[in-house]
Length: 101
Image (cartoon, rainbow, N blue to C red; front, side, top):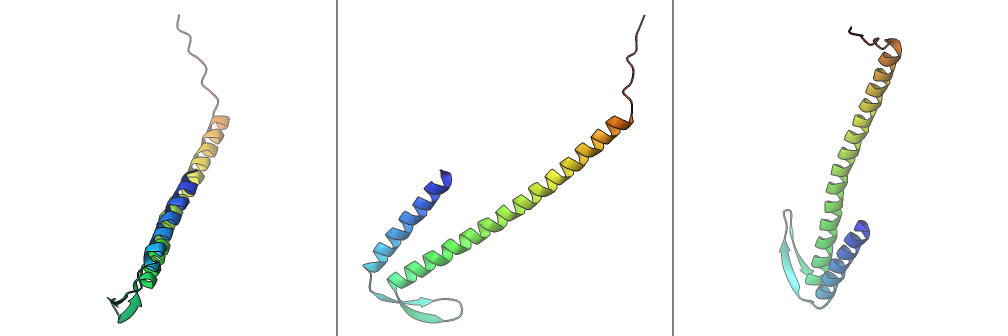
């Protein structure tokens, strides 16, 4: 459900940006690091939104991947420790209770 709401929010933002961009046919001068170009506002708005969206998903995906790898390592360590604990319990007999008189 959470992902559906996020998808709908992004879709609404995209539709608003395309709608606003379609009504703006002005040509603007856009200076970026390597060069300068003349672009329509609608094209510039849509392309920058797309680049930002892809870049955001890539960064979030890298963090998610890092967390998943960390979780897998922790689960592997936990399983190994549980096996070691089970082996030591089966090898060493349990101490007999001490009876005090």
